[in-house]
Image (cartoon, rainbow, N blue to C red; front, side):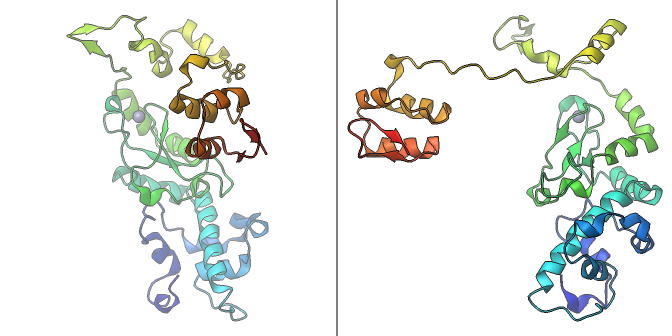
Length: 295
Ligand SMILES: [Zn+2]
């Protein structure tokens, strides 16, 4: 942060006007001055006291050493982000965010049938350093990456997991806006005819976007248990298909299970070995007779 302009503009305003920081709202200094609002943050932020002084434009009690200054600046940004996540759950914070939402500062849903529904910033985790900010669409209930890369280094924890839910509870007109929109699913057509339900390129996967429409479906939806089936045992690769390119890709796809005999048959040269080692993430040993062994 530029200390020379500190006197001219408060740190908070400076931070919020920085490039790519336009999702942030300015947290009221009174909110930060209330210790109750900062409960628990002192244990997760390094240089907590100094960082807090930076945010509130206070003179540090003891002068900072030049080597500490960048660390304190970083800590101040992290601290501000975590305070921001708490602030936007309060009434003034929600209203400040609503103003941005109205102006479409967070962008619109890319889905055609969401018809430009405004997005709400959301974090999937409340701890910093896990994932960057995502944007939630109240119409299709999905989350999206921000369209501009300038937002891809903003931590999701600076908005938090609860904000979008709280925001929609606070402003029910968002739900109304959503209800005005269609929940239609795009239907692929061929010369004007709908594709057969069972066609490989047809709408077999449309259930992913479907909503329950009657009571029975709602009940089924409630009872639904989501889970990922365990990975099945990897099929053995047909030796006939083992041309050099296919061999490289299959080895890569099988997480490094290199079959020494197959490699020997395929007469892999140095370039192929190199590619294998890059794709599999293992180093291959050329000194072994004929085949390769994984170190
Ligand atoms: Zn959407």
